[in-house]
Length: 181
Image (cartoon, rainbow, N blue to C red; front, side):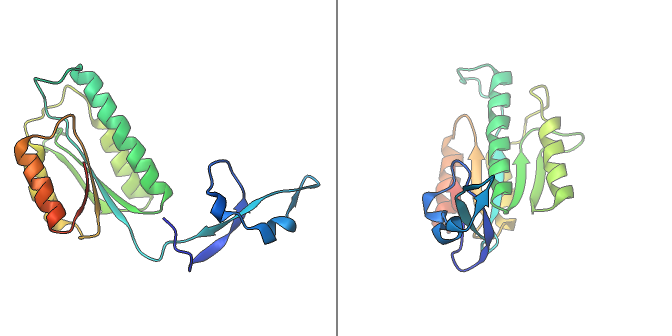
């Protein structure tokens, strides 16, 4: 997520960086170990991006895979999205319908900073497939989404999307939320 008007500096080219980010004029003057090296421009974003990750861990009787594997796969996707959001310097939140302590579900609002990220990582670590899961993802979405900014990206990780949840997601998109099921 880059804004070409907020230049923040240059750094050595690394594999995977977009070719359009190479600064050829600076590369001509850049030497490392006696050899020229490519350098890339880096830009900061001019707006704040929020991402909310919802992880549906309800028991699905018709799921073709083992519930423990389903939990681990969902956590893997949530961790990946969390990492990508941090790379893009965005605020991130996390919610799951897995019980934790006396709470029926996990809900950490969008935010940033070391302590906030630590809370999310601790929530990831506490999730297991033995925990109680009696709170529906639809009820969670209905409760949490109205508290979010309209420009928040909503990521829903779920093994299946049932009729009521699909209708709610459609309504959220119609209202202007950016939903990624």
